Length: 182
Image 1 (tube, rainbow, N blue to C red):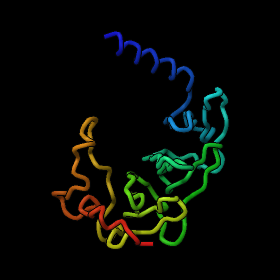
Image 2 (cartoon, helix red, strand yellow):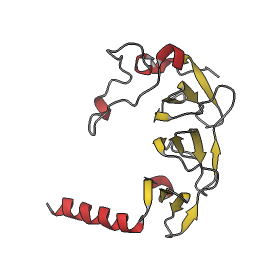
Image 3 (cartoon, rainbow, N blue to C red):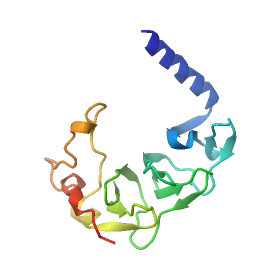
């Protein structure tokens, strides 16, 4: 009981600190909280308690995010995928065939980073230098990619990806296909 009360009081304190924020997430590796103000754009609260802007990240909702564990984090926004470094500099992952609409899911694999959303399925290179559409992963072939329904505690035993009972989807694409599509 005491633990849940402590968690609740921490959440209340964070809510006071982030007043007016409509979206936020934390990145442990950077020891930073990223927060979006509806009219002010994206900011970061650093471990030194500095409130600093995130340069180059549009004022869009973050629909998915991934920390690949090296250099930059990857937020998937309603306008595509971005890479943000520890200094708050953002760049859009773009190129021929890159997504320009909602990104709903990102995952790390041994060979790359699959990303999916309204434009289909894509692969980001491990070094986050390029993004390419996955063969047979276009929105015309598989439809819009939806997030996998994984509940807390089930991740270790989840069979990813799964086939959808409703027809073709990115869930039916084998993660083994994420190799050398560059």
